[in-house]
Length: 272
Image (cartoon, rainbow, N blue to C red; front, side, top):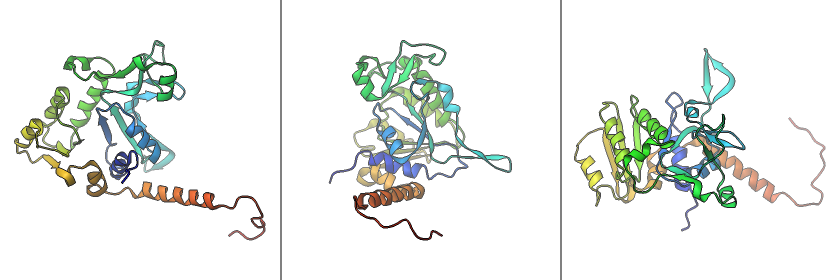
């Protein structure tokens, strides 16, 4: 059976955004360079805050991670209402769509821009793509933008009542692990590990399991450790997005079946 592209990410996002609005915004930290989540965001109409601002020219501005989005003029007892479908999105190892820019100015202090992949191809900027090397020392993360992204990661998971859900992470990155294990010093921190292989042939996850800490939950195997199964079965549904998809399908079906040419009737009648 052919699995639709990005369905894993879409299912996960639908469930993630079911969280009550009185909780802090959901944060997604990824070590992947690809644009799978970005495509899923667009498909579901999810607004994501990724550290870049601008329209025609998107530049790295880490202060945007502190921004939020609210409905204008909608207040109740002095409180504004947040827009629901918003996540904060951090690409800790860079992205295929990030490039070094020579155009440093007041709007681009860090010299980092986000470009469409087709433009990177056309302008032959592939050599300028910003991605974290596959084998480097931790000191590399002291450079921008990585230093700011890792700082955000550490700050977020060290907040009170934080829950870190890792999916497919083998715990082989020393810098990631240092930050995660530091968060375990927080009594209210919870770590949930979803990994197909889990402790099988993975000494890092086996070591974590042997800590026998009730705050650490490991889901592994063909059912519990499967990304799609976890998102589709173990996490709640996001009915709002499902409703929007049904509406879109109805409209598409209506316009696809609309007669082409010919007389479709008069405009006379009553509308109530």
